[in-house]
Length: 326
Ligand SMILES: Nc1ncnc2c1ncn2[C@@H]1O[C@H](COP(=O)(O)OP(=O)(O)O)[C@@H](O)[C@H]1O
Ligand SMILES: [Mg+2]
Image (cartoon, rainbow, N blue to C red):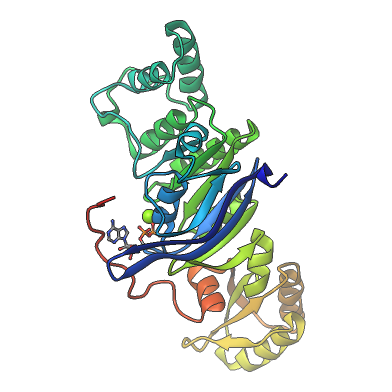
């Protein structure tokens, strides 16, 4: 019964010298979903994924993938998972097509079945036109798409995507998001790490926020955002003399305290319910207050972090990673 979970981690620990990279991580991931692991650089995301994927042995705790222990039953786990990202096995000297053919042949597909499978993947991942170019010539976005295509050649039950969009331009980022959605629609479970709240928000059904190798918050994207407020409304008024009046109108309609900017014409308010924003702006206009500009921003990962952990996301944990010795 319990094995309906795609992944379950209990008290997982990995120590590198003085660094407790993963420090008592607990996670329960239902199947058929996108599960987001959100955290800043150095939080322990990659280390956790590598243990999930049997590439690194835990120092303590346990992980089960569809009920199979990653240490005791690593062989079964390897048949069920696929890891892409920093550790993908794309060969630069081969074309996109050759990479996928090679992989599917290795996985035991016949020559004919490989060819068909690869054609459909190249099509689905928008790589058909570039299929016969060396992977070395691919852009970052194309490489990421080839990477994800490679990870679904075998239709695994669970895919790990380690920061699949870090460093990509917005268009490529959107393409990768669409692919992740397409992969999940086929019934695959995806565990995705990211440093971007908006990415987790767009893709994930549930999110675990991690910090110093531990889960500090877990829930649906809306639960997490609600816990820190949905965002902030930033307003600039034409006449700085009327800022005090603006402040009282905003605090009354939005039921929140207003922060005064260092610029005498600006204010910002934490917003828990964005539907109230239009009303607040309406009240200002009725009060004869001329608003030059306004912007509604989502809380950033930094704000989420600060709210959840009491410290900023960027801190002293960013160190140069040594060569893996595992
Ligand atoms: N092979 C390693 N040897 C030593 N320290 C490591 C190694 N891998 C990761 N670390 C350290 O463990 C911490 C977590 O790293 P990592 O899992 O890569 O975080 P993230 O993927 O969230 O950025 C960091 O402090 C990092 O420097
Ligand atoms: Mg990482």
